Length: 76
Image (cartoon, rainbow, N blue to C red; front, side, top):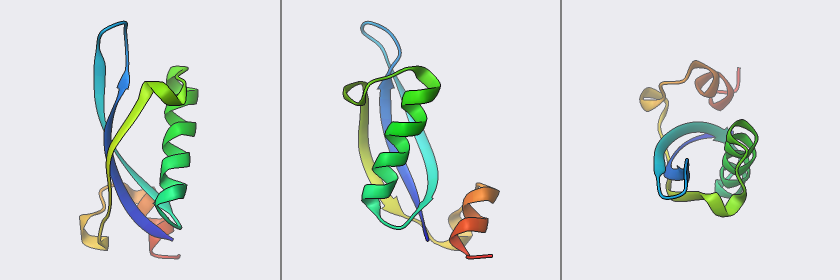
C-alpha cells in the first residue's frame, strides 16, 4: 500500500464548506477517492456531490503523521 494525502472541502450548511486534509493508505488514487467518499459520507451524512476533492498526492514515509497510515503503508 502507498500513503496519500488528500485535500478538499465538504458541505456543512446551505452556503458553507469545511476544508479537510486526510491521510489515507490505499493501492492507488481511485482507492483514496472511494475511501474519502465512504468515510466522510458516513460520518457527516453527505452525498458524493457534497464532497469536493481538490488534490490527492502521494507522500513519503517521513511525511506521514497518522500512525495507522504509517503502519499500513510500510507493510508491517
